[in-house]
Image (cartoon, rainbow, N blue to C red; front, side):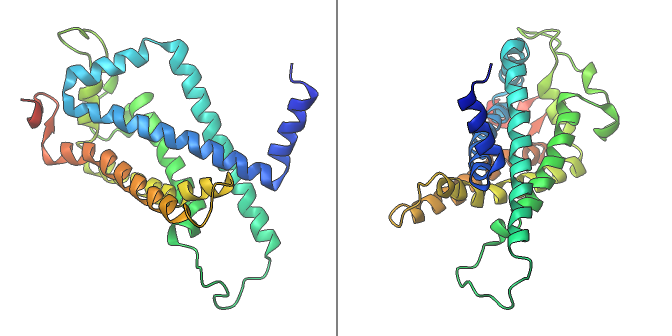
Length: 250
């Protein structure tokens, strides 16, 4: 049972503006960690079918780890979006009349001004991405095949779902890859401001460290963007195919 102290803490987190800022920052930190791990998993595509399918088999074979991770991830997404929407509404309510001109020369960046919109678009893409590659709904993959029929024909993963072939086949559609690249771009734009805002919310901002923190947000976002888009770009360019793996592994 949750004690009185736990109930009080929950009330402070969910019921106050400062608490919602902490919720958004901490959930954002968790989601950033997930994007890094997920990217590293995706990049195993370049190690060939066996490596990627072995990684996928490990995840699928450990349901006691996979499902808590999925539920935790969904909870962080829900908390992050809820906090962002509530804080945006509060900010608008506190400033009902828009300023004329630009009274603040330290103008908000494009990334900071579009945080909510980019976050909602990325959330919409995440839903599609889950339906596409996790639930594997045939009607939305736009390649006229059912990914559930893909199974490894030989080797250690024989009979297991062929995740390598699924990813390559899925990204062969230029519209799917284009949507993926756009969403990743918006996600990284979101992160370029969100990472520095996270440090500020947690009280880690100071004049000495702030320029370095801002650079970290930009560099980390750029590296994530490049890491994520290499997969669809490699598939569309023919560098990676469903039958031969990647040229670099031959």
